[in-house]
Length: 403
Image (cartoon, rainbow, N blue to C red; front, top):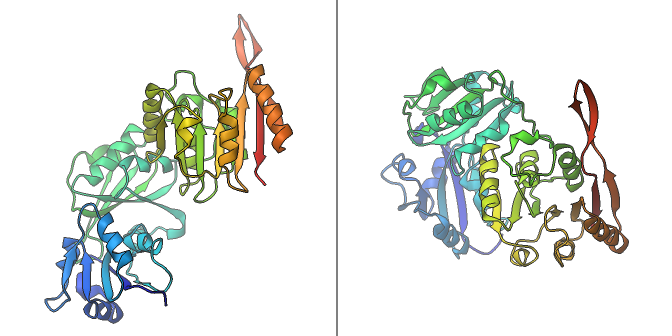
């Protein structure tokens, strides 16, 4: 067993002490200290060990738990601690052998059971520690979603997101105090919910129904250009889809989107794989604000945004797994900085529409290998009484994987 104190995470439901297994009860009673929310601590018997409520922010207490040299601390968690819970947070920080997790039925599994939905076919979204706009990412016709929300206004906030994005007709079921004797289930539609308050402990079951004329936004890269607010600094739809295919969003990977413009590359990177991270680097503050608005509208509000010019703005960033260079390609040192920052196996893609940018990409291929492609697109447009092909600017694209 690794050196250091032990942490036992016990999942507890709305049914409190009565709903715990004998193993879970024994873990609580034998601990040196119990940590949980005030609501959870109130569920414990009078002979429970000394207790501490989570502070706000919780970071300092987490650091204390990780550094604790001996003894055993029991941490209470809602439902399944490894499903959007404190158990997952501690597992990333504690060495093997220091952490034990005793699970309880999650609100997700209870909600699926109440709805009669096969859990493997349902999307779970947590808006507890994230902006409520994260719900927007999964809004597609026919998708079933369970949303974790918090506070008396949680359900109303989720309903507003659905209505604002054209899914107000979606069946909207609010499940309060799941598993408790006082459990309550209320059925509505998103546009009918209004501002009704709910118990702070609740989840929402949604069966997505798209309003007429609402565009279908896929999780596959290549959203319509008009899905973005833009001043023209936008990687266009077909080129964007080809670029993201080369960047290959993968679990946990970090993307640098250099010269991000409207943020479309980093936004669709995040939409394609929810565990990825992205940093949009953009020198103009007005465009950086626009990136934030686009990201919130499209359900990925956690995007990182750095207002600054490359290559200087790249110096203090976490090392990327993928780099895209769209704007500022001809600025001295930008392409070299992006390539140099990549770890082995990292991927780079850069697009150019000028001869000067094209020359840089040809030189990059000569130095580092990879592939060059020329993308030429034409769109059918009216010409008087007829229709003709209107060509867009050709895009030269260099892509490579670092050996």
